[in-house]
Length: 108
Image (tube, rainbow, N blue to C red):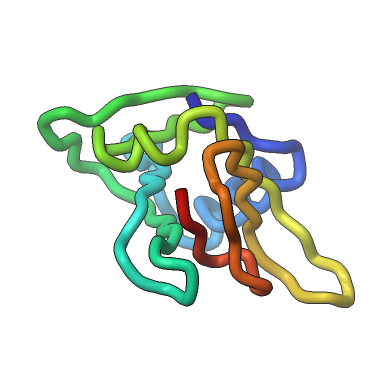
């Protein structure tokens, strides 16, 4: 399961509203090879369910993960920061054994 903080929910709601998306859209969270630590996080909005997708809902946000990404991201919390050190989504992943300084990639 992936959870989201209140700040992340507010930002997701803003993006949905600004993008003119409807109730059929959901947040797709995935993992790709790359980045300085080996694996990178990816966020997208989607409307197409794929075979093997795992779905969760937190704070009214529907979240999809493919099975491979689920194995890397189970228990992760998605947060959003807008402070002086940068603006963007942050992943608090209990499965990561190493992360890069920017927080956009990790290793297990």
